[in-house]
Amino acid sequence: MKVTIIGSGYVGLVTGACLAEQGNNVFCVDIDPKKIAILNSGGVPIYEPGLKEMIERNRAAGRLEFSTDIAASVAHGDIQFIAVGTPPDEDGSADLQYVVAAARNIGRHMTTPKVIVDKSTVPVGTADKVSAAIAEELTKRGLSPELCSVVSNPEFLKEGAAVEDFMRPDRIVIGTQSTPAGLRAKEQMRKLYAPFNRHHERTYYMDVKSAELTKYAANAMLATRISFMNELANLADLVGADIEAVRQGIGSDSRIGYGFLYSGTGYGGSCFPKDVSALSKTAIEHGRDLKILDAVEAVNEAQKYILVEKIEKRFGKDLSGKKFAIWGLAFKPNTDDMREAPSRVIIQELVKRGARVVAYDPVAMPEAQHCFDLDFKDNPEGLSKVSMVEDPMAAVDQADALVIVTEWKAFRSPDFDLLKAKLKNSVIFDGRNLYEPQAMQELGIEYQGIGRHN
Ligand SMILES: NC(=O)C1=CN([C@@H]2O[C@H](COP(=O)(O)OP(=O)(O)OC[C@H]3O[C@@H](n4cnc5c(N)ncnc54)[C@H](O)[C@@H]3O)[C@@H](O)[C@H]2O)C=CC1
Ligand SMILES: O=C(O)[C@H]1O[C@H](OP(=O)(O)OP(=O)(O)OC[C@H]2O[C@@H](n3ccc(=O)[nH]c3=O)[C@H](O)[C@@H]2O)[C@H](O)[C@@H](O)[C@@H]1O
Image (cartoon, rainbow, N blue to C red; front, side, top):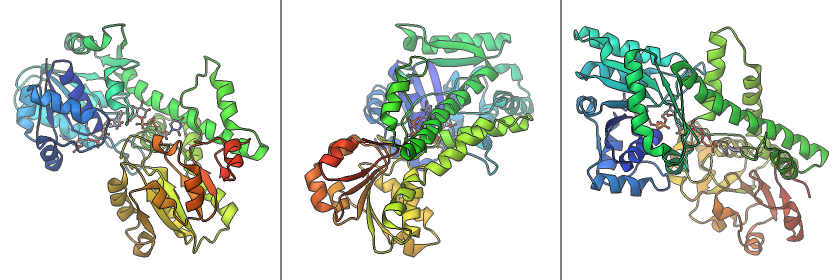
């Protein structure tokens, strides 16, 4: 099938590459000429395992192209995916300007019937706005608004495992209108996703609004689990219980399950923070206050400071003259994404207290440098206290403590003897509970996890 993907970010690129991999003819468009230039010179603007190879393979086969040419992109696809950003507005609601602009572009250029698929995460009711924007442009040109139908097909992939998640999804959610055009769109979506349903049906068909809400419900539920576990981990610290044992104890109940029960330094990334807040705003607009989401957000905000609180308790409030090694900067492993990464808060707070920070991350350091430049733009002296090194052991050299923020695999079994020899004090603050407290004690390492106890 001929497919256009509007927006060549995490979701657009992965969707485009994976649909091309299934034999579709895919045209990816973006308004950012730098991104398209990188893609057209054989590069990939983001780090995502397996993506580069998949893009190369499908480009070489002539099934995948990248362009900034909007008219050509609209002409190409019978199915047009909107996969542009929906960042938080100033009041926390989703900013739909990019989605609406993409819709208008479709309306300005389309001449034949199209299925418009909203893949961006958008509040309930957005498909109606997309339809209205396209209809307005079509009407201006004397064309019938009946030419298109808008489908909601939210994306559930995780960064760092995006290609795998897209190719083998837990479910595919498709929300369609019940008009004749909507029914035709449903059939086209069924055909497009048929290869992903080969071994068993994974698609849930529903109305558009339910599909839009399903996306926010999923992210809000996952965020709620994380905040719940962070609250319990902090309590475990106080009462001397071990949150890992508790996680296993409750996860074994199939009604609860093991996933997304890891306590840590709070959730980050481009999605949970903005989606929890946007869902909350949607509710407020409809006269309801979703108190549970307010609590989820408040707990998460506080959790980003939990390691700094532990460090203060151990070293005092004034950290001048102290040096901390940070392992892991990205908001999670296997990505270079630094959006809402807890590491940014932790580093700013340590520097505020006078400390020096030497950080290491396997892939996110270039991206982190841009973020630090922004975070410290009014504080050049603070920025001078943050440095990055290419080797995790170089970061810990003469550091007062090691602070683990992201659970990269490479940090799971370091050479502890070397680590001890390099550190000024054998102290580890582990924001990801990578090590066993008992083993650390036996090694003579002072170890503080999040809710961990021997
Ligand atoms: N990043 C993730 O893991 C996931 C993101 N989502 C949702 O998918 C949407 C996209 O997210 P990301 O891919 O992370 O965003 P991103 O910021 O990485 O990419 C968005 C791209 O859209 C481009 N763009 C903006 N307006 C455009 C226009 N009118 N025409 C063409 N291109 C345009 C931007 O230049 C940018 O390259 C968001 O709504 C997000 O919430 C959903 C599931 C997973
Ligand atoms: O809508 C989105 O964009 C995506 O948001 C999340 O994916 P992502 O943000 O890539 O990453 P996650 O693996 O969900 O992690 C999010 C944050 O939660 C934290 N987390 C995760 C799991 C856990 O048990 N504990 C925990 O603190 C991670 O460290 C990370 O900071 C969802 O998992 C995806 O299903 C969804 O499609």
